[in-house]
Length: 220
Ligand code: HEC
Ligand code: HEC
Ligand code: HEC
Ligand code: HEC
Image 1 (cartoon, protein in one colour):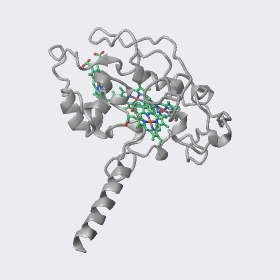
Image 2: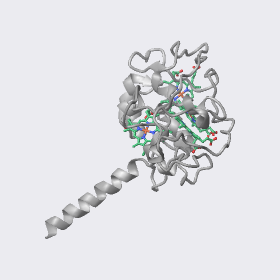
Image 3: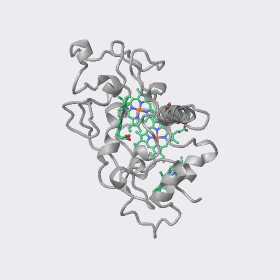
Image 4: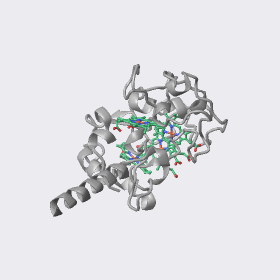
């Protein structure tokens, strides 16, 4: 009896933890018609479909957006240069974040069968100026460089990938997919639940209150 009860409690805790990991439904990335967000579809109730499809996806991670970005201007200063071109993971963000309306104007590769393959329709709210990042990445924190070949001798104040993973409390492979520093090195696109059970603001991996996000990587 007691054992069975404990098993039930343990399972309940595990389920609660699984839900606490992330919930894209409580973020601005929920573009489904029932979402609380101002940016949403007027006909689709599915949430993942705006970014993923279970079949016929030519690109990782089962990507459902029919979009090829232009040429990016990469970060380059006297003290740090990113790679010559942007990594494939960061590129995924730009099918929505390139300009004010790419989020609603980019077609899906596979439309919903629930709606007989009709394309999603959207309310026409333009993305805010700051969220429309454009192709010029010179004025943004550097992304698109390899942390596996990173020059730690030149930048001794950057923590190791393992230490950054420990500081942020996320798997190293999620923070640096294929070893690359991406938009997702600071952001969790699905929303990460922090202490208190709510999604950390601005889809960050760690709240930047007191600059704790910056300090997870920079020993300043
Ligand atoms: C706004 C776009 C967007 C939405 C909506 C979205 N995803 Fe993702 N997803 C991404 C991106 C971008 C990546 C890969 C890069 C990353 O994680 O930074 C990803 C990666 C993944 C991965 C593989 C890597 C990982 O994080 O485990 C899984 C699994 C996944 N998503 C599942 C889902 C499911 C299930 C839903 C719906 C409940 C969903 N996603 C909704 C954009 C989205
Ligand atoms: C399917 C379209 C789509 C994709 C793909 C997408 N986003 Fe977004 N994202 C949006 C929309 C729409 C908003 C709301 C814009 C606004 O508030 O002006 C948003 C908002 C955000 C915000 C602000 C969230 C907040 O709570 O203020 C962040 C951060 C963000 N996205 C990061 C990313 C990153 C990083 C990626 C790639 C890993 C990504 N997004 C991919 C559509 C998308
Ligand atoms: C070094 C960490 C870091 C990286 C890398 C990063 N961001 Fe951000 N991003 C932030 C922080 C911190 C904020 C919140 C800024 C604030 O609230 O003052 C933010 C805000 C945003 C917003 C919301 C802007 C707004 O005001 O509505 C979007 C959208 C966004 N980031 C997308 C991206 C995309 C796309 C990439 C990759 C090109 C990226 N970020 C790379 C740290 C980062
Ligand atoms: C996930 C790790 C990570 C996070 C989080 C992060 N950075 Fe960085 N940052 C780096 C790396 C790696 C570099 C490249 C090495 C360098 O220039 O020091 C860098 C570079 C920089 C540079 C120097 C760019 C140059 O031209 O030399 C500044 C300034 C900077 N980051 C500020 C910030 C601020 C402010 C925050 C918080 C909003 C932040 N970083 C968050 C990892 C991170």
